[in-house]
Image (cartoon, rainbow, N blue to C red; front, side, top):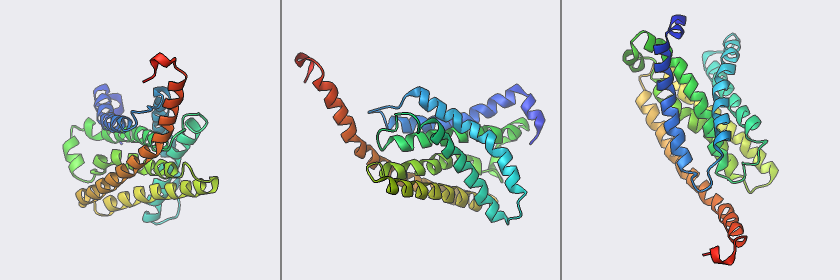
Length: 252
């Protein structure tokens, strides 16, 4: 990456805008899906920033992985795994100690938030060089088409962990732990397969891969809606508790 691009404030500003706007739009979409009992903005902000910091931590880790004696396919799996595990740690460290994971739908919300924080900084760093060279369009239309799908990829891949943990919300601890392992495995698999298809075909099959990713995203949204319905009894129970504490003249 051309280090001179980092010295140009205009280049940096354009890269940040291009990297962060897609993440913010996706975050707004998912938060609107949880409007009945919205999560605290402070905790969401910390989770998003934690996802960004994970990018800084993963870069040296991926350099170490690149020096390992593995074939290219294995390296891609390890790179994807390192990203998903670090995003997972963000949620484990920032969100799990809090008292806000109190309904099934909360899990995918926070995992998606961490994934979008990661994607925003990753995309901004990715855009610095082509913007600095004033060759953004050419760059995105050749071997770097992965950028167009990375925001959705990070949101869905991380969200799978939260989605499956949310489905296990009312289950036994052993079942919850098993669901957690399944979730992280699915996240790494989706991330790795997406990257492998893009890398091996030099971006030529990007539209097909992106279409498959959107199909997965639609399935994800359907399951997310199920989690919303699973969360409704908790929301209604708390609403009824609040209503019974009001004076009789204020109840409906």
